[in-house]
Structure formats: structure tokens, C-alpha cells
Amino acid sequence: MRRFGTNGIREIVGSPLSPEYATAFASAVSAVFPVGAPIAVGWDGRTSSPGLVHVVVGTLLLRGHRVIELGLLPTPAIQYSVPRTGSQLGVIVTASHNPPEFNGFKCVAADGLEIPRTVEERIESAMEAPRAPSATYDRLGSSIRDDGGVDRYLAGILQRIDAARVARRKLRLVLDCANGASVVTSPALLHRLGARVASLNGHIDGTFPGRPSEPTEANLSDLLRTVPSVGAELGIAHDGDADRAAFVDARGRFVPGEKILTLLARDRVARAGSGIVVTPVTGSRAVEEAIAPFGGKVMYTRVGSPSVTHAMQESGAVFGGEENGGLIFPEHQLARDGAMTAAALLDLLAREERPLDQLVEGLPRYSMVKLKVDCPISVRDQVLERLTAELRAEWPEIVTLDGVKAIGPDAWILVRPSGTEPLIRIFAEARDAAEAQRLAEDGRRRVEAAAASAWS
Image (cartoon, rainbow, N blue to C red; front, side):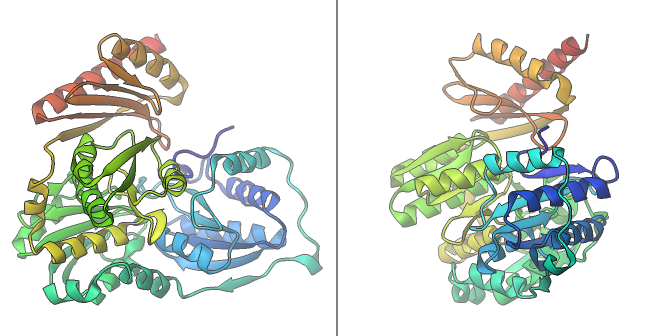
């Protein structure tokens, strides 16, 4: 039974994510990794996280492991700490941007990268197998608390940018932490960068009372209003575990994630003199056009940070990330990192001495539309098969790396099943905004028709 999606295990708390499920997961981890291996455990601010952490930590201790408790931290801060605490594995209790009724588990290897699919499969198999007995009383594990995660992580970010130059700008910012884990890191980071910060949703609350956790334009209405009303130069928003960052310009306009990806990709390649940028099949064609004059090339992967980070490691890429705001700076760490993304953008603004809207104006012009359609997992293979046949008959190029992507001279459409929810996601991009919207709506109609046919 497959339990890991594109970014770990995510389930609804209570059923199926019960104490028994958490015990089975932790027992499986203990069966896959050597007894006594140090395992770091960190978590986000969801209401269910403390209970799940107790089950996971207790199970690992009873199996004989040494547990390093990192505490409540953003996912990228936990990933940064795993190799720096000598841990052989990191277990993160989080459901990232999912709604509050969800939680889950993300596993990272000793180097801080997400574990490969082969290791996920071993954990899944062990969850189905009979559980081994606990260790005897004289071979139980031990637990220690590591409270250095925040300072360790922030120091790592600050050494990758010109913090003094950013501080001289005394930027006026609005920060929306989404009541999530970034509360313990991003305000401190911006303070150290000399920024004057107004805060939204700046306390931990696992019910996400201020707004839904995902930092989409529709969910950031308060930030869109607040940035111009207080005269700020930039708005920054995170998701629940802060592996993503979204931005609002001084005029209160949401800047799509694909534009931030393109902007920072161009900057990284230009400064390196050439290089590979890795992005999933959802990546904007603007990235290719923006980095080509500087000797840059794009490598496409399946959706999900594990696919991107492992491809970056293998190719020696200078930059990578996803159009949803999850960007990866390999000189810092091979992990999506919302705070590093914010710091890198502030560093760029300080170097260029121009506002974000002017920098974005200079990018290749494309518009992207993203839609989603509810679709039970039981019929999505049939839906995808039908869509593939339809699009293959109408478009000059078809890519089936992840879902089905139909590519034309100046536009493309991608239909792919979500790896974390019972949804099918639709992405469409074109030079003309109206054409991108038309393509996306056409994709939605096709998916809905295919799903209805599969049920009939």
C-alpha cells in the first residue's frame, strides 16, 4: 500500500491518522534503520503535532533508538539541523500547507535531503508487516533536547547573503506567518536584516484562524490590503511549515510564484556565469527564456521537492524550485526553504536598488493559471488515460513525465493527479492571460467529463 505522496505522508487526523497509525509508522522506521541510530524529530504547530510526536518519540525509544528532539521549527530548519546534529534520519511531523485537519510525516536522510522512493517503500512494507517486540529494559533508547535549531538555521541563511547591505536599506515589510512554524524564525531573520516589520497571523495556532495555510493569492487578501496601506515595500507570506514563500509588491499585487522562480533563477545563473536550473513539469517556460542568455539550461522533473532536490544533487544545479514558492538554494541546503527565499529576494532588491514590480517587468511575459478538480483516487487513472488520448490527438508534443503535459509553440497545459489529496490539478500557461485561462477551463471541463464517464 502506497502511503507516501509527493512530499511525505499526509492524512486526516483521527482516521486514518490515529495513534495506532503513528505507532506503525514509527515502528516501521525503527525496523528500517539500525537500532541505536540517532534520529532527529521536529514538528510544526498543528494541534495534533504534540500528540503524534509523543507517540513517535516513545515508540522509537522503546525500539532502542537515540532521539534528538529539535522542537517546533519550520521544515527547512529541521532539514538544516539533521546533518548538523549527526542524525541518521530526520522525522518531521507536518502536513505543510494542508488544512488543519491533516497531519503527517516527512522523512529526511542524514544529508538533509528527502529520503528516496526506495526507502519510502521499505518503510511502507514494514508498516504492513508484524511489529517487532520492544527492546528489553537495558537496551532502551535515550532522548536529548536540541535547542539550537533557530540560531543554527538563521546563521546559515545570513552567511549566504550580504546581510549588511540589506540592513542598510531598512526595508519596510509586512510578514504573514499563517499562524505556522515560521513564527519562530522569520520575524527574527527580518529583524537581523534591519527590516521594519508589520506582522499578520504572527502567533502559533494550529487551527489557522487567520487564513488557510497555503499562501495563494485567494488566501492572502489581508496581506494584499495591508502592504500598501502601511506603505510597505514588500509583503512576505509563508505556508504552515514555511518551506514556501509568496510575495506581494508595494502596490498590493500578488506576484505569482513562477515569476519569483524566474527572477531568482536568472539572478543565480547570471552570477554563476552558466548553470542548470531544475524545476518540475509545472515550471514556467519563462525560466528557459530568462536564463538562456547567461548560458543557463532547464532540467524538468516530476512534481515534488524530492524529485527536484535529487536531480539538483545529481546534476550540480545552481538553482531549483517549484512555481508554488518552494525554492531551493543548493549552496545553503538542498531543500525548499521559505526563509532563505525571502532573504535571497531581499538581497536582490538591495543589490538592484529597484522595487520588485520593476524587476518583474523585465521578465519574459507569460501567464499561468492553476485549477483543481475533486477526483476520487479510484478513477483518476482512467481520467488521465482519457485525457492523454484526447490531448495527444490535438497537440504537437506530449510529455508524460508526470501526468500529461501538452505543449505548443507558445502555450502548454498539464493535467496531473495530486500526490497529497484526492484532486486532479490543472496548469496552463500562455503568453496571453486570456488564452491561459481558456486552456485551464478547457482542461477542467475535460477532467470533469472524464471523471463522470468513469463513474457511469
